[in-house]
Length: 88
Image 1 (cartoon, rainbow, N blue to C red):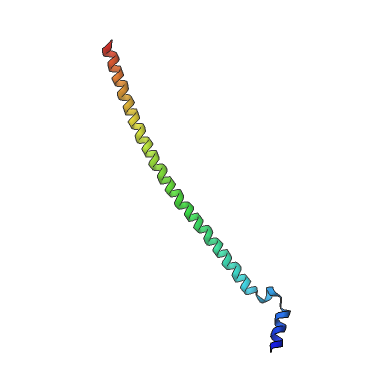
Image 2 (image 1 turned 60 degrees about the horizontal axis):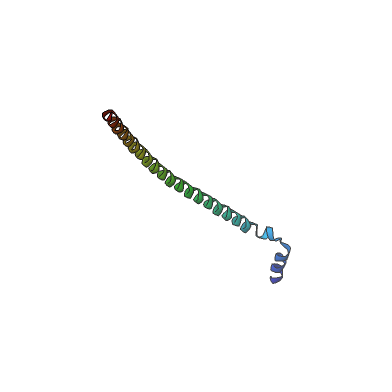
């Protein structure tokens, strides 16, 4: 028996002996790489969503500030017009 087992090890090429295990290893490697890609893309989508929320807040603040600035400028122009009219 020992001789036949030793002979089977010697005469079978590595690829044919471990073909099933190598195929499973490649399948697992592919699945792990796929999971890493999906995880990375989900992380990117979450980051993009947070960045979009920040941009929306900044745009809203700028819009509010612009409205305040426009109103303030109108008031200043009105005051200057009034002073100019009454100082003449």
